[in-house]
Structure formats: structure tokens, C-alpha cells
Amino acid sequence: MARLRDRDNSAMSTLYDMYSATLYGIVLQIVKIEETAEDVLQDALVKIWNSFDKYDPDKGRLFTWMLNICRNQAIDAIRSKQHRVSNKTEDFSANIRSGLSSEDFKPEHIGVRDMIDNLTPDQKQVIDLMYFEGLSQSEIADAYNIPLGTVKTRARSAVKMLSKFFKGRA
Image (cartoon, rainbow, N blue to C red; front, side, top):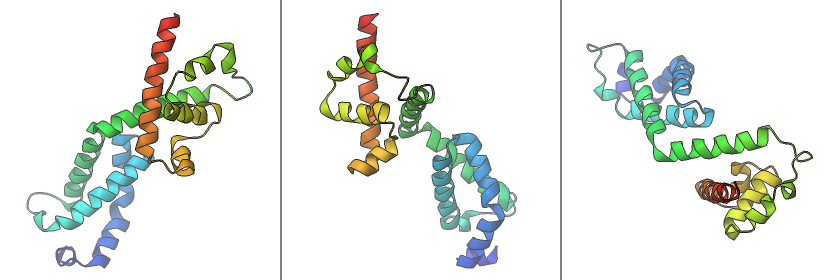
């Protein structure tokens, strides 16, 4: 602990080796998404490193202190608006893709192509790539050099628009 207080990088490496797997598992139980858990753990470890001088061994064990920081970071992450929107969009795309193969799905049979033509060009591009080409949001962002958040926003707004079209047909 003295080495950590002295900002010894090798001490942080040792700490990471000893506790990262356990802390990651706990964070993953809270956030449920591996990529988010990795980001949260990294942020938490930076916070631990930067605030190690605030750790008081008289108040509790080091692991408990680190666990509380990781837990709080994970809770903050799932409460964030970005996480909630991302989850809704990812869940929707996973549900759509999981039950359909490109051979089985013929959108023209239910008029989806006609509905998609009513979307903005940006929304139409994202929907075409996601649901008819089978690309993930990350793949679209990489292939078309569009920020991932923008892809998710376009997908979400397109889904909202399409749901209005479906409600109008019922």
C-alpha cells in the first residue's frame, strides 16, 4: 500500500493482476454488457489510482474500498441515458436478427420496403444495412465512418417512425 501511495506503477500492475478479474465479474453482473463492463472497470481503476490517497485502512479493507468504487461506477453507467438508449436499440436489433435469416425474410411481403421509403435518407441507410444486409451498428459506424452514437440515434428514430407506420396499418 505504501508503494501505491507513492504512485509506483508496478504496484498498480500487481493490484490489477490480483483483483481485476473479480472486480470485472462484479461490474459485469451489474451492467450486463461486456464492453460496458470493460469500460467501467477501466474508469474505476483510474479512479482508484487517482484517489488512492483517500483510502483509509482503518475504515475497511482495500478490496472493499475498490469494490465500492467499481460498484458505484457501474451503477452510474447503467443510470446514464446513453446506456439506456443503447440497450434498447441493441435489444431491438438482436431480437430482429435472431429469429430471421435473409432467405426467410421477404420484406416486400408485408410492405416494409414501402414504409422504409418514407424514412429520411440517413435512417433508411442504417435500417437497410442493419436489417437487410445484417451489419451490426458497430460495423456500420466503422464501414461508413459515422460515429457509433449517430448510428444508434438514426436506428432508434427510424424504429420509432416505423412503429408509427405499423400502428397506422393495424
